[in-house]
Picture 1 (cartoon, one colour):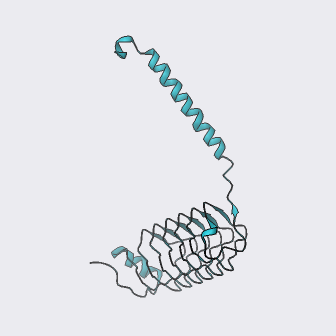
Picture 2 (cartoon, rainbow, N blue to C red; picture 1 turned 180 degrees about the horizontal axis):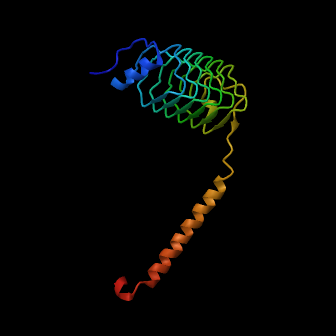
Amino acid sequence: MSTMEAKRFASREEVLEGLKQDRCLVGSDLSGLDLSGIKLIGLNMKGADLHEANLTGAMLCAADLSEVNLSNAHLDGATMYGDSLRGANLRNAHLHAAKVGGVDLQEADLTGADLSESRIMGVDVTDADFSKVDTTAARAAGVSWSDAKVQPAELPAAMEPPSWLPKLLAGIAVALILMMIMRRIAGKRRSPAEKA
């Protein structure tokens, strides 16, 4: 089996080179590395150590980050979609202006994390700990905060739909109506021989 042995990476370049050979970073030590702007998509990083890593502006999508250590990590402006962060340590993590959607945060510890100005959509927070979390100017939609072990002291404001959304929906409705009318007209124009 060609899975990467859990090991310590010394640099960003070493991580990128290792990912060319194997997409598995289970239990690996990437702590303190500058991984800003990196794209970590579809990786198995279960139990990896990323504490104090710089993941500013990074893209973490469809990754298994369960039980990962992201304490004191910098994820400012990061994009996180479809990840599993079940049981992850995000204590004092910096998630300022992060975009977090469809993420499993069950049993995660976010004590003292900075979620200010973040956008949180469709996240499972069951039994997660949000003690002392900064949610200043954060927005959320589709999150059942009552399922959390400890809710944020100040819940993020509800996300407003974009101003263009009603116009788009109205345009789609008009287009569908016009298509139905055109089909009826086309059906009436068929000759009796075509109908038979």
